[in-house]
Length: 327
Ligand SMILES: [Zn+2]
Image (cartoon, rainbow, N blue to C red; front, side, top):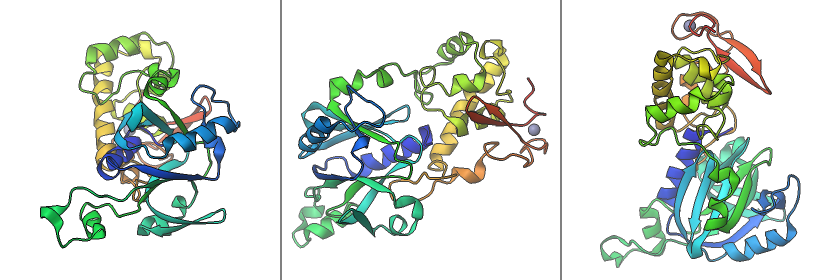
């Protein structure tokens, strides 16, 4: 599942490539994705809302894109807000597709066309061509040339590829979306400079659950999932099953530092493509090669060469070094 570094990479891409453009149309073949923000039932098609979604989104301009935990918040003109959660296997792509009957045929870019992970298109937003920002008056430049000079082609589209089809798109007013419990109840952002050590200690100390579960709870700290919680705990030399309130001051200090170090490294490498995740041009992230323990069962620990162990934790698994991370 895309976590903070993957979602932030997508959000950064969107801010560069689609801000200022208008959504001129929408295509989808899986209406269950278009949830009614005020009535998000699983496996339900909100027919009335789907009709409203199509009508309202048409003509809206993309003003800015923000990440909150693993949510992508696309602020639109008219005080509307589109929330996209990628869930297990979703990712957003910028490219061109041709829709023929019920099939989408990818046209560009290359990675979107060639990589099988990018072929599960279920939602497309058609964007208007770039008109402004002509270079030096641009008298001899065609519309297409100007668009290309901005790195965005005319007629580019924003699409959602999702193998397992759990991703969701919620459209509502800014107020409606920002006040949803799934947004309002989120914990602090770990890379936010205002998230200080004292606040972190208070949050962790008040939890009796296993530290791995606490790190993965978005209402405690936002955006950390299975991959990065494993790697963060290895970097901080803390056993994933250690009760959070039993961590000593030194461990808390190491953990606070490890969270930033691991997430910043992953962000710099544009995320982990261990399975489905791709960036908006359909390319893989580079973090998989640098994984510290996640999905490295039986491989040597990067510090002490002991074989990495995998254990079950709830419905998930935890990977750690039994020598470096003692309970
Ligand atoms: Zn070790």
